[in-house]
Amino acid sequence: MALGAAGVVSHPAGTLFPMLCLACTAPTGSMLCTGCVSQLSAAPETLLPTGQLVIGAFTHATAARRLIHALKYRGVSAAAEPFAAELAKRVPPSVTALVPVPRAAGRSIRYGIDPAGELAAAVGRRTGLPVVRGLGAPIWWRRHAGAGRSNRAPIGFRQRLPIPAGAALVDDVVTTGTTAMAASAALRGLPTLVLAATLAPKMRGGETPVEVA
Image (cartoon, rainbow, N blue to C red; front, side):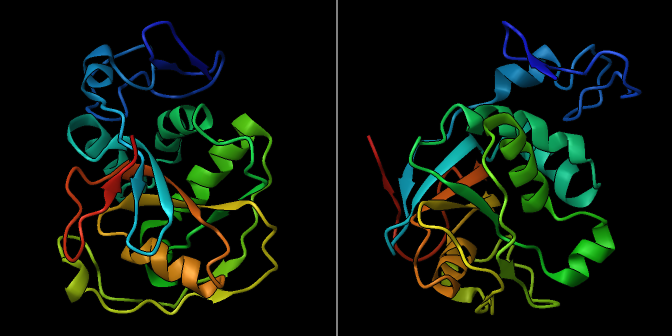
């Protein structure tokens, strides 16, 4: 899989990938058509209220929103690759491992995919960083999509494995930061960096995160 001069992620030679854009399904020779690539907007680095730095590949809008939807709800694992290509360029050299924030087990079964796990694996392939699945998730929690921070139920993540110093959390979408902060709290605040596929343009609820210049 290659990133072309125009920023288009190409399908690997000799594979059976359909030649359709993963975001809009238009015919193309790449994972993303040039129109969708032109819609991608880099997300600013952002601080959560509890101090974690979030590095998002793209702002959660237009093509990026359609692409993350394909990953989360249609089980298109290849949709993680454009996000991983961008994040791999922005991972600080101090990061030692990638810890995916797991999806509720019931949703993983329903949709056939754990999106943060797929994203972490894709970033790991590009950077050589190990993926440590050190977090356990509840079977279910109320969906957070569209809810502000004050209306989101607590998530009972638990630590399953030791987490190395310098590890970064990997999440699919950061909207209010509630999920990422709960995951970090379960690991006693050890990961202070969150890598996300998309970051909401204006995060909902509670304090406004601080953009880092």
